[in-house]
Structures are given as structure tokens and as C-alpha cells.
Amino acid sequence: MSYGNPRDQVIDDAASTAFAQAYGERATGLPPVAIVIAAYNEEGAIGPVVAALPGEVCGLATAAIVVADGCADGTAAEAQAGGAMVCDVPVNRGQGAALRLGYRLAREGGADYIVTTDADGQYNPAEIERVLAPVVAGEADFVTGSRRLGSQETKDMIRRTGVRFFAGTISMLTGQKISDTTFGLRAMRAEVTGAVQLEQPQYQASELLIGVITHGYKVAEVPATIHRRRVGESKKGQNPLYRLHLPGVNNLFYGLRFARVAYGTWWRERQRSRPSRPSRPSRPAGSGRGGVAASGTGRNGPVESAVRANGSGPGSVEASASSAGACWPADPAKRT
Image: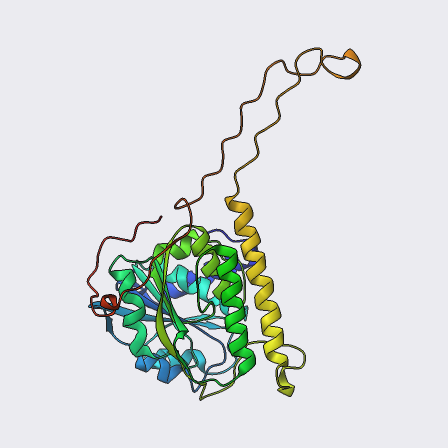
């Protein structure tokens, strides 16, 4: 994994070292499935979330890793009391940075699969098996739940419209049909998180999804449920007017920032995957302006085209109904 910001690497290196020292062999010998949760001031919510996580999914043992992102309350202590391994970072950087660190801890600990869920209790832990099953079966490298294929309790029309809009936009940009780009309950092969460039401190849902698609990994969606938050308040769309709780304002800020990350990531990945231009041939001797000989007498060979990392293009797979029940490990899904 490469870091665009050296400060982030310093923070993550220190956090990784402290995590390994705190948990010893538990940190370096994780079970096959690591459930990663980013949490910021979720005291009162994180405890029940951790307690409800399954100890086994698809016949594979699990471990919960909570990254407490500069919390000013009892989030870290509550998560640890619930049985999670906690990486307590002293500075708040955002959900994206916290998840990136969680992915790293999972990979370094030897986990084969990573599942993400939120700290606020909006996702159903019973659906983790449905999300992970296609990955374990080798049918997909990355699976995301979808409220549009499943169900949602919110009646916020602005948010519903935003989900549809960004799903359509990212589907158009990537050529991969996606119905829900922001769903937090996801499962993936651990190595995927190390191959994709992740530099966004916030709104990483779209960065990870677009990166996975453009790297040629197989992506699938499964029906899932998102519930209303019952404890605390959402941290999404923080802005100077956040505390006023003005209708639609927080959603507007969230949408604008999400769009910036989505379009920026798409453009970055598009530039990465474009072939390099051939170099111009050198001028023959004596052909310079005014009869002055040009330096060099030969022609430079064409620069080799950049090969798209990890595959030749986006791949997709629809999760079959049988995947939710058949969770036996299989060969990793081949990238197309």
C-alpha cells in the first residue's frame, strides 16, 4: 500500500505497531474473516454492534477490529469490552482513513477476507453471511449490499434520490451496473484493499468501489437492509451549519463532497489505465532548423503501453441465490 500523504503513513505505522504490541499473537494471527469497523464518538452504539457480530460466518471464524478514529468519548473502551480488538488512533481523520488502517491491520494479521459494517447499528449482522458468501465461493472478489435490491427504513426523499443519482453516475462512468454505491456492509478478499489506491480521508465508499472496478476485479451486489439510526446522530455531511439540523443542508454538503471524490477518483483511475503515448522519433542528422544538425541519429523505440494492473478490464458477476447458502471456500475469483 502506498500513501499519498506522508503524515498518514506516520500515523498508521504508529497505530499498527501499538496494535501489534497490545494484542500480540491475536493481532498477527487473525482468523480467516476480519470484520472492520470505523468508529467516531459512537459510545452507546458500538457496544451492541460488536456484541451482535457473528463469531463464525460461512464456516469461517471471525475477529472484530474497531478503529477508534480520534474519539473523545468511551467508544474505544466500549468496543473492547464487547470483545473487539481496538486500534485507538489519537487523531480524528475521517471514516476513509480509519477504514484504510483497518484494512491494513487485517492484511498484516493474515486475514483472508474483510467485511466492513458501520458502528451505528444500521446494518443487520445476520446479512454478513449473504454478503460474504460469493467471495468465499470464488464467484466475486468484492461484494456490496444494496438497499435498492433489499430494503431501507428511511423516508428521506433527498437521500433516496441521491443514492439513485450516484448509482447511475458511477455505473455510467465505469461501465459496471451498480445500484447502491454507498452501502457500508461489504465483503472482499483482503488483498483487494492493498491493490487499490486509497487516499480519501472521507467518503471512501466510492473511491474503493471505483478502484476495485477499474482494476478489473469481479464485483457483485446482494440484497441487504439498512435500518434507521437509533442511537446518536449521523456524522455525514458535517458543515458549518451542521448543528442547526436544517432540512436538506447536511445531505447537500454530503452529496457535493461525495461527487467530488467520485469524479476525482474516476479521473485518476482513468489516467492510470490509459496507455502511454509513443515517444517522438529523433530528427535525422542535418535536419535541424537552419541546417544545424539535430542531436541523435536514430529513432527512439515506442514506449510500451502501460498494462492495467490486476486484469484487463472491469469484471462483474451476479450473486446467485445459491451463494448465500453455500459458503464453502473455493479458489479466488479470477480477474477478468
